Length: 317
Image (cartoon, rainbow, N blue to C red; front, top):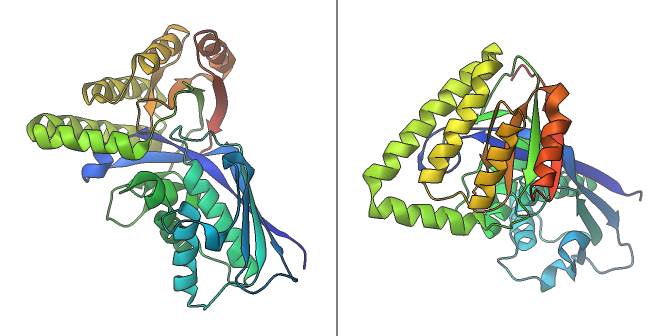
């Protein structure tokens, strides 16, 4: 039997980090320039149920049965087996690779899960819908993020820009005009679960303060959604910078991230902010296409370890 492959993009959050955990909206978009890939091959001589997982990017080469129950792949395949109502998997070899930076807020875990689900589903003769893939990928996200918002598996599972409110039906966000971003990595790995927990502790200590910031972020997200739908890109950059300032007040930024934001603005970016949980990971900068490389070069000269230039395409939602 020939091998079966599938892939999934990365993602970035444009607006709404942390506020989304408390019922407010967030805007996220797929990043097609980086992808996770899964390849499934039958193992005809291996016993039934023998699933070998090879993930060189995380130095994993092990049988599924030997992984801890709370491992992301264990969660993923337990959920898939239950959903498909099968007693065991046929023997197969799953190899997953990814060009998405790990622990950087770009959805590497969700992308690997989505790619694996698509490939394995097709291998089993049961291709999965976008909705099924998103719901099942959420189970593996719990291993990485504790209580994830659901935004990563949603935007990557559907591969569309989304207006996301936790617990509500998915709303795809139409984007009328393409725009260009520079994504710059700080090189600092960050645990989403740890940062979300820290924000929760601060919220419990002073809910009025946190809620006022969440409300402000929610209004920025609404204004940004209107700008994206109407093509009013002139307002988008300042909204990004304002969102970053609010995330600073939530204590989820770092001096290194703040410096990258300032460097991007000084180099001509229209706006910039951290993207994702914070305390590491990436910043994103909205740029004019003709100025993208100038901004990227400036960031690389000031301690960004990597930059990705990407254009977010127009979509009907």
